[in-house]
Image (cartoon, chains in turn green, red):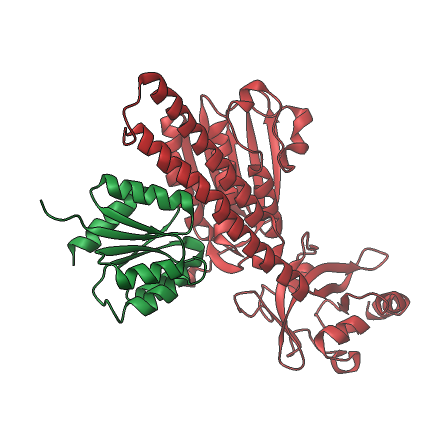
Amino acid sequence: MTEKQVILVAEDDPGLNRLISFKLQKEGYQVISVFDGKEALNAALNENISAITLDIMMPFLDGIQVLKRVRPVKPDLPVVVLSVKSRENDLYQALELGANAYMTKPFQPEQLVEKLKQVLGSN
Amino acid sequence: MDAMLRKEISHLSIVFNQIKDGVYITDPDRRILFWNKAAEEITGYSQKEVLGKKCADNLLVHTDLAGNKLCSTDLCPLHKAISFEKSTTEPLVVKALHKNGNRVMVEVSLAPLYSASGELIGGIEIFRDASEKIEFEEQKARFFSSLSHELKTPLANMQGYLKLLLAGDAGEINDLQEEFLTTIFKEEQKLGRYIEELLDMGRFEGTDYSYQRNLLDLTDLLESLADSFSAEAVNKELDFSSSIEPDLALFGDRERLSQAFSNLIGNAIKYTEQGSVSLKAVFSEAEDEIVITVKDSGIGIPEEDQKAIFAMFYRVEDKDVRSKGGTGVGLYIAERVIGRHGGRIELESNPGKGTTFTVYLPGFIKAPSNRSI
């Protein structure tokens, strides 16, 4: 049996974090859940992960800052950023910084799974 | 005629110089005859500098919010007020040029002036600095944007969890549990729609400042609405017809007008169980305005409700109507938006037979040169 891929779920809303994590586990991934930017950066740099779903608005460090610091170290790590549509500029900035895909909130978990599979597949 | 106006002005100047709004008066050719103290403050030009000049002579230079110059064109609001002898119903927001080169957002109201014998003797413009209000509007927009996020996130999460439960992802559920969960899911969707409507109200009600004033193709806007609503009407087995004159145009906010007309057409379909819904738009040359009618053969609106129907949250008290769902902000939004474009809505209704909403909007027919071939 191949080893499970590990997804880092960085999302400060506990309801959404659990929802995404649960859905991903159902899909056969192993999940590390974190709830702020510092934890996200720490896990992204130190854990052996296959991809991140990265919320942009998070306490301590926002997703943009996390991405800025992770990219130089892990240039090929697939990253899906999450944000509300009203903050489109954040999304553009994230894509410029090397995010592979984005989801605008609100979304349904299966949409995120699909997007995640795409970025994992293209890697 | 001039002498008469001058006499009037000298009587009024004491009053005009006390008020905080900028006021100026012109003759029918838009030559400035009076310029009050507040106008001096807001624009930087003294009365001495402007008397006898035309309002377009590098003074004020009104542009719409998109930056299109209005002066010396038929779109000059003062020209419209004088030549069509029409006062503004809602203040317009335009940018004016300060003597120091800065652009100031001003809210303007205009009216033709008449002598005691009823002769047209000029025009008056009253304007005020709108910067503070604009700041308030921007704050409000930010508030609604964050409120929208705060309200939608938990709803979306709930939907996500319900879907997991219904899919059996958290263990098998029995038929009764499935039924109840489905009900929760549907109710939650309804709640989501209501929240959407309330947020619309926050976005659409507001004052003028966040409104776009772009040249827009009303024919195209109405045709695309007709397209999207005809399917809905067909689903209810209603006859849906539309007749829209080509090249209808106006200066306005496409998104908001689209919302306003969606609300009118959507209501017509919602409250009609059989028969027809029609949309018609023509340019009335006599009145120099666009006339749009939305007509249905639905349940109608009782006479006692007709006046109040545009009030916020107003719903006709009737058990059949309540079952349709909705927050009662649709017509409120429509009327606000139309009003902000200088238009008005009238309604005619016979309970049991149907309702016709007629929208009158200042607009024009695009010049043939602008037509795409």
